[in-house]
Image (tube, rainbow, N blue to C red):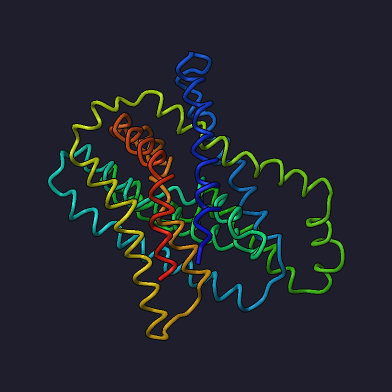
Length: 327
């Protein structure tokens, strides 16, 4: 079972990190472009370092490889299920809002929030947990740069192998995977490469410094969005309530149910896989919801509202959803 108290503490810490972002925006100490600039720093530098760091923590073995494959396949299938459910539920919403509602329901903050949370909760017991989180995020990025872009544009050109695979998260996963696989060979594991990467040195210090930026900077950006939210206006939107219940409660519970069914039937049994998938699915709407909305001229104000509100509420919803692991 997931330690609910530890999870609550870690989620609360992440949410509190939004406060500086709110204050900086409210006082005018940061401008409108700050969110985009910081998002690029996370996307192209900090998150790749976080992903690579996970792959350098342990040596390759079959158990880890099997779990990686399971997380990747089940993660993609889960997100495709989210898409089908959201498409049905929000089919009658106004077009610009419908696109944001579906996108924000399908794509959760599994990278910026999910990876730091999983490392904080399970890192001591399972040093390789960041690998599984990274694999989930790889599936996420394959879909977000294809299906996600298609959602906003209705342009099938985005459904291409190039769009799916050539992005910062998948490329950094490839780098990490190469380092991880090289640990299977004594020459690199005990010789010049792996010890240099793992031991205190320039590379490890560089990666550690960058990866530590992910959680606070991501929360700062969400804080910027939260500063502009009109909660009175938000309370009048019925679709917002539906999105919250669907994305923060129903869909994560469905993921838990599917993985538990696989376990009961003997098809696939692994508790850590369940934890990784459940926490990744239970995180709030992805910050990339706002980035893509701005990039593709969507309703960026509405996207910011959903991301901000779900990010605040996750302090309550994530521990509640994770109580399922006691069953």
